Structures are given as structure tokens and as C-alpha cells.
Amino acid sequence: MAKIVEINKQELSSERVQLALDLGGFKKYANNLKSKFSAYQQKFIVLDRMVGDIQKEAKDLDKLYDVFQKEMDQQEKEGKRLSNELGIKFVETSVGKEWERIAGDILSGDYSAIKRGLKIDIS
Image 1 (tube, one colour):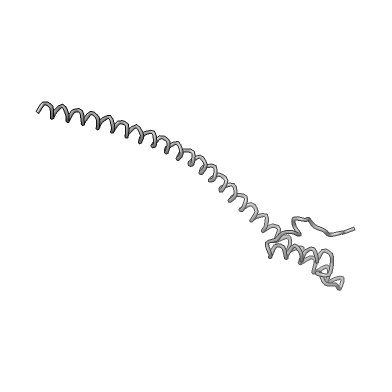
Image 2 (tube, rainbow, N blue to C red; image 1 turned 90 degrees about the vertical axis):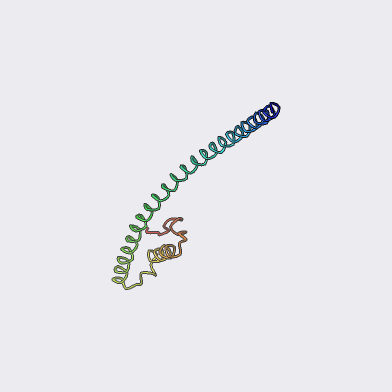
């Protein structure tokens, strides 16, 4: 019986050693995983800030677009009024043609006329 107890103690001791080794591996793996999660979390924090900045810029652009659209409407009204007084069509004037290009850009989402800048010769 003493041999059985001795064998059981040896088996239990070797199982403890194996368990300790296994737990050591899990601990190392868990620490590695925690480190990677921390790195990803930092990246997501940066991404969240970028998304916030983009949302703010989008709101600012929306406001700017609204102001621009009101100005375009005002310019069209004034251009039509003045051209009517002169007996010509607004869209046949250089200002009217440029207004048409810009209005077309806005509708199409192209914005190439706006990016190039105004090409009106007022000399």
C-alpha cells in the first residue's frame, strides 16, 4: 500500500508540474493577447477621433454649402433681373454661363468648375 501511495504522490506531483507548465503557457498567451488588445484599443481610439473630426468637417461643409447655395440663388436672381433689364437672357452672358457650369457641378457632384476657380473676365 505504501508503494501505491508513493506512486500516487509521484503521479500527482508530475501532474502538478504539468499543470503549472500549462498555466504558465496560458498566462504568457493571455498576457500576449492582452497586449494585442491594448494595441488595437489604442488604434480604435485614434480611429474614433478621426471619425469625430470627419463628422465635424462634414457639418462645417454642410453649413458652407448652404451659404454657397443661398449665394448662388441670390446671384441667379440678380443676374436674371439685370439681364432682363438689358433685354438679354442671363444664360447667354459670361456670368450666366459660369453660373450654369457651377450649378451643373453642384447637381452632378463633380465640382470641377469650382475647383478650377471662376473664369469670368469682367474687364
